[in-house]
Image (cartoon, rainbow, N blue to C red; front, side, top):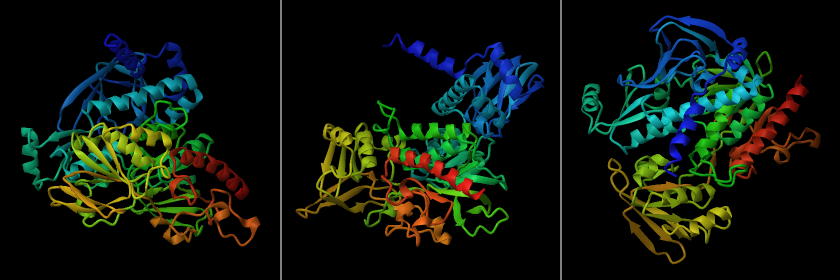
Length: 558
């Protein structure tokens, strides 16, 4: 196996940096604009919006990673037949690298819209380009030498919060331990950061002290600040599997689509370590990888992605000139759309355990990613929940923790978990299933993090305490519907959105389509919908099915 590694690495690099033939470059010319640049000119600058994809026709362009602290790492030199860009080129997001002309350079610039048109029109060439763009973004993330620099105490709550936000959004970053790096220590002192507060150094050199996620997003250019006064055909609220599926199918069929999410793409599924029962992936796929592919795919077809962007309310009055629906954002913007898809999902429920909120981010977690797994190495952890997400997390954590205590309220996992996961858990020696058991108490000082827990067996009323520092909660689900309050959309007894035959329509002829809510033109898909199966495959299927119903609705309004 050791002899195969070099060829595998060579193949991966060949896919990352393919060489275009003269014929392929000629086919690309009709999509772009010729440019010339003098020696030393910056074609792209880390931290600044990228103009698109550059194809080098003559000369050499040097590409390097640069972080906010001035550290530069060379990556590659592009000559004739190579192209410069990564996934951000599809949407004009800020560049993650510098590209500097090493002499006189002639290039073909494809703006994001032109690049997307090329990818659709030239399928074979487009496939190679998209694969290279994705692999380059992955390599930048793995290298950790570009993007913002996070300085702080490894494992601290706020540093973990910022890392999780960037990781879930597929943004590269690097972490520096403030206690072991002299320059970082000096910067911490100069900034006046309090003990335990992390610093963020953005690519442009801006320094933030323990920023909120939206402030970090603005600093690295993630936030879309355009007014977006245009009329969209579809506004999708929520970028989990259901929302991304809706975006891919709607945009690929020519509809103008905007997708909004307050934090990251992927939803709850994005935090799944491995999904093994999704069609077409016999070896399984991580939720982040699945969501990342869908995110790129939606942009490939032209969907606008506003992430992070918090939706404050939905205006169903249709008082505008086009009788449109309106989505109001917390930053004051108002987006207009002919239809709206509610794909805002559900959040895990907080169990009724004293002091729970004190330890959130300090030992209490609602997802299990590689970040949290590093904190659990060779220690005991507790996981509460009996659904598929809980099972996937238990199996993943068992690879890092000394023991996983899995607490479930019922007698077994049979009623709530897929059989393959039950078999996997039963075969894993360091997962200990504790049926009829509930978490009852948390111990420790909030400033220092969780120090211990207590649970109770409801059958024999016995209690047990353990010095556990990390607890993972995958308990129930509450729908994310706070933004729907002003629309009077019909909900079921648990707050999930009713659709189709579940809607109380006065006349059978007025009954909405199967995924349409009680408000005409407003659809619901995925976990937020009443009666949905709460599975990734089901969510993706609903997103695709909703697009057909949207087409019928729009045709009826024409």
